[in-house]
Amino acid sequence: MDQARNFYNTILKSSHPLLLSFHLAGKAVPIVFYIIGSMFLNFTPQFITVVLLLSFDFYLTKNITGRKLVQLRWWYDSTDVNKDSNFTFESYKQYAPGPPINAIDSKLFWWSMYVTPVIWGVFAVLCLLRLKIFYLILVIVAMCLTAWNTYGFRCCDRWEPNSGQSDGQDTNNWFALPSVPGFENLSRLANIQSFFQRQ
Image (tube, rainbow, N blue to C red; front, top):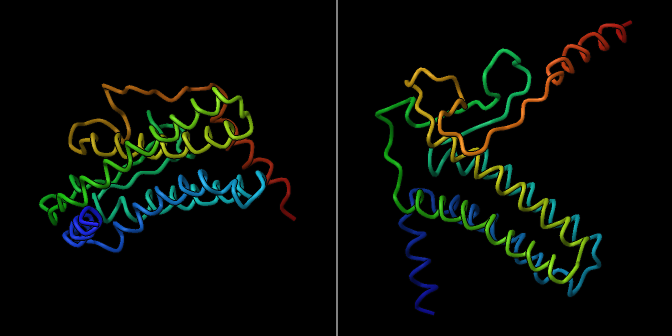
């Protein structure tokens, strides 16, 4: 009981206690529902519910809690074919000196971001050992969504706006997105197709 009270007091020290609570709940609820959902649901509704919860968490983290708790925001822009990287970042470093980032917000944000993909990775190993292929698909979706969000925020945090590099270009990039020739032509093809569909 004391641990719960201490955690509650820690949340209250946050600059945005309600948002921090939503952020942590967004990470925890899909995991809890994955664990106990099979007790009262079949696989298909459980799969759909967990994916919807993960999608909500992805959106909430990327667009709201990341911006408020650690003052970082990123998005993947596939329309500009002339950029070296398709990542676009907004960071507190651009607007310095800005309001300080609360240490509690930052610590809990980053811990939750790094721990969540690891938990889903453990579930993936368990699914492999038990040969639960359909649950493995669900866990891989969860792992991809949480890891992609973590990767985006990690790159955004490491990004230096005055370093002369374009958005998302990182010299020490530990994960480079594959460049597939011809994908940039898809947007041009869509423009041509929409031109001929006009009446």
